[in-house]
Length: 88
Image (cartoon, rainbow, N blue to C red; front, top):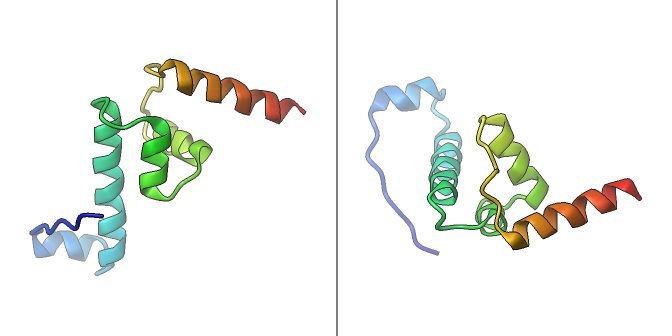
């Protein structure tokens, strides 16, 4: 995995109560969601990159008001399978 370094203003660190890990997590989520929206990552790849289950990544998108209407055929099939499992 590649490591990226960012320079951020000190005031941002203050707004997160000096919690650098929270900033890192938020930046990673924003970047992965951006790459998903650009079509560079699938839902599954995005979930894996964030260490989330497929379902939790969908919930993250929904919580941010991001539509998932751009599902490809494999992702639609996975959604269908997940829905069937819930009905059992």
